[in-house]
Structures are given as C-alpha cells and as structure tokens.
Amino acid sequence: MRIMTGTPLVELQARLQRYVLGDRSAVDEMLPLLQTRPGSIPGERRLGIYHSAYRARLREALGTVFERTWAYLGDEAFDAQCARQIAANRSTDPNLRHYGKTFPDLLSHTLADDPDVAELATMDWHIHTAFDAPDAAALAAGQLSALGESEWSRVRFTFHPSVSIALFDWNVLELWHALDRGNRPPSAHRMEAPLAHLFWRSALRVHFRTLEPSEHLMLQQLLDGLRFADACTLAARDNPDAVPLVGSWLRRWLADELLCDIAIDARSHLRSG
Image (cartoon, rainbow, N blue to C red; front, side):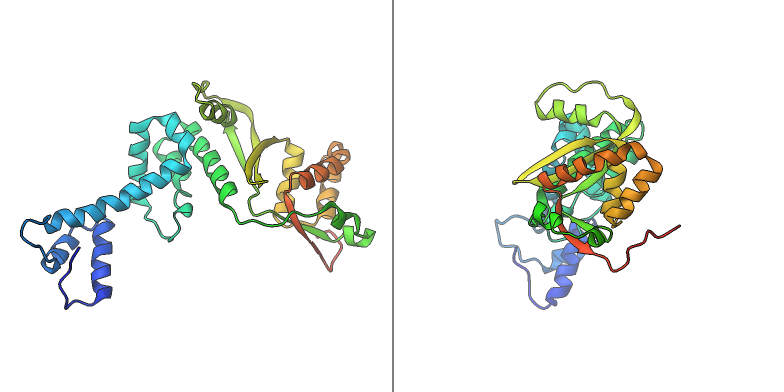
C-alpha cells in the first residue's frame, strides 16, 4: 500500500490502527493519503484488506486454541461468538498466544443458558496455557530427601509454570474426550458436586486429571504459597483422613514433574487468622 508523504509516520500508524480496530471515520482520514495508480485496486478496498486480515487472524487464533469448543458449537455458532469476542476485546499483546483469555468469560454471558460451553472453553484454555507455558527443570526427589526436620517445617514449593487448576460444575471432561476422539459428545449435565481438574505439561505433553477434594485443597494452598508443613497442619485439622495420603500425593507430584523448586522460609510457625 503506497502512501503519500507529508504526514508523520506515527500519525499514519494511528489512523490505520483506528480504522483496523473499527473506527470507520478513519477511512476519510486515510483515503486522501493513498496513492492509487490507474488500474490498481481502489484505496478503500486496499484498506479493507487490512481491516479483514486483522479479524481473520484473531479468528484463526481462537479456532486453534478453542478447537474442542468449536467442534461442540459448530461453525456458524462458533463464528458468531468469535465475532463478539473480537468486537469486544482487541488484541493488546504482540504474541497472539495470550488472545482468548477472556473468551470463556464472554461465553458465560452470551450463552448463559448453556454454561457447559463456557466450561469447555475454560478447559481448552487451560490446556493451551499448559502447552505454551515457559519451561523449567523438574525438582529432583533427592533435593527433598536432603532436607532436615527444621527445613521441612519451613519449605515452600515452586510449581512448574504450566500447572493450573480449574473447577467445573459440568461433565466437561466427558465432553472434551468425546470431541477429541471425533465422537458425538454425551448430553451435558451438571454434576452432583463441582470437580477440580489439574493441568500441567511434562515431557512436551499436556496432561490433566481429576482431583479429589482433599488433594485439590492442599494443592491449591501450596500453589497460593502456603508452606508445606502449614498445609499439612491444616489438613490434619480439617480433614484427618487425608493425612496418610500426603506422602503418596507428594511422590506423584514429583513423578509428574509438577514441582520445580523449593524455598526455605525463615519463620516456622503457622500464622493464625
């Protein structure tokens, strides 16, 4: 696209950006600046290429991330929701991997009568962020076995950047697996109680599994920065049946490479309140 000189570049960029983002009045500002050769594509049509390309790229990004949600809704319904997302949420990061974070929230409002759709999109998003998260070396079991008793009372865990937890009210795990296999999904239904799902990446593969309530509670506390000893103390107070399971959970977290570092606190007592 050839542009006549005389207007500062920053102003040209601002005008083009306003037009691409939906300000139709910017066309009148841009057209007089375009050089149109005889037989070439008209200036307004050339501008339209940029306008459409921006939206097409965002639609492509949403389709890549929310592939199972797309399959669940179908082409027409998914395209309509993508158009709403693009109109309401412009891209604010040079890396499109962040675009789509608000899509599940949008679906929860635009499809309020079908909350399973927003939850399926939430699952798609957690899988995407687990796959795309920065890498980090896994914590070796030997690093824990070398800790003394006083250090165990003050240790905090750092989790792999890909680790996250999402809570679901609907049978999204069944829906996702059926869609992933190309099968007809089962009927959506609300479960008797919400279920937490853990997401993470290990050996270049994304994994997810359902968490029992007691493991979910402890994992969430540790992800929030609570010391391991304090989390064990709270577990013993609130759910004594979970205490014998803590050791097996810790071994599994290490085997699954959920943990990547430890920090030893200077203070060792459980804060009240």
